[in-house]
Length: 242
Ligand code: F6R
Image (tube, rainbow, N blue to C red; front, side, top):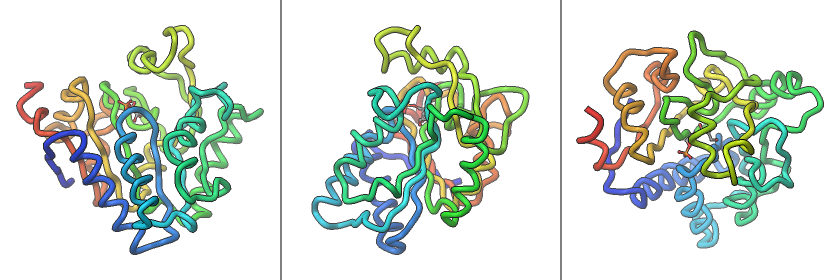
């Protein structure tokens, strides 16, 4: 696992965008694994800028998102599909038909989840997966538990995740309690993983990832087993959380 310590969030987003640019330049039809939440917004802004400046071209790029709330569709501003359109897809020259987000309104959620890994395989797998981390160590919506699920699946959100995500909703009662999420195995199959850490509430979870053992109680620790993971933190985190 490679650790990159940067000055601040701006530098984190620039460093992440540079890694994406290198991959897209080398492989113009790369498959990008994307996430939502506050962490990747800076990266997406940089990618939009680079696309406007003609530094990168998304016309042959394909994207796969790691999760979606159950019950929310594209029209709902809180859905992850809506987030992706607003924060990235609407502003770059990507064909939306090449962007995959789990369908939180699928009639049969189990089938939607089961078919998702197949779709990823059919695209040839993910070249780079961007991840944020929850304050409880979750990656995508793989929450701390006694066991972790390998494939894409339907899951209940933990109370701490519901509380953390309530900042995006009018009230905590509006936060969906279920999601479709790529599983740990689906994430670990990505050729390269980039974990961005934003927010002081993540310090404990990240220290466990960097210094602790692998445990299902902190799902991110599984990333220690992947051969190409880069973790980017900012320097204010280095002396916190002990
Ligand atoms: C989002 C996702 C989540 C977030 C995590 C951190 O698609 O899967 O795992 O990456 O909850 O969220 P933020 O970035 O809002 O702190």
